[in-house]
Image (tube, rainbow, N blue to C red; front, side, top):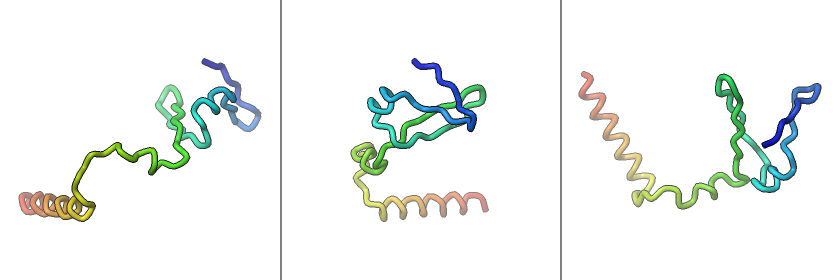
Length: 78
């Protein structure tokens, strides 16, 4: 844990040990109400997601399935 101070322009420097450990290049800053969250963004977000999903269907098949579901929902509201 580190206590950090903002400089005159409101910037904060992430300690080198954290930058190196997490290989930080970019972070997402989220206002969580009473605190901020810093979430590391991978250098290659697409590569980081490789293997995260186990869907065997193609994109086209998923799109057709979503369109059919939307049409059924719209028909039910009529």
